[in-house]
Image (tube, rainbow, N blue to C red; front, side, top):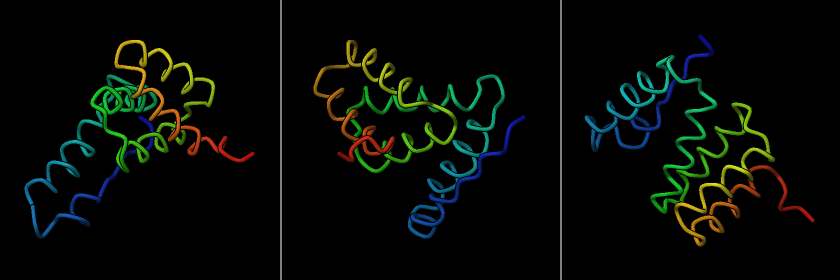
Length: 111
């Protein structure tokens, strides 16, 4: 198994306000689902990016997951191909929005 994924954002940001949600986020989603071994972490990162893209989520959570994808080995060429492919199914404006974020994450926004 690769390095275990540990997340504390739920407790850090919502622990007192929404303890059940914090538990589900940190212990179930990241503690169990992300650490389940049937799918490698790089593939989970790709699935997550495409799922958020399809939902039109282009906030800090997508930026986090783009950074996570990069950290787990998704290359600039791979993310460009992934976003292009997904755009054909989820919509052109969503593709543009995700490309803007991916370009920042992969450091291509510097001229």
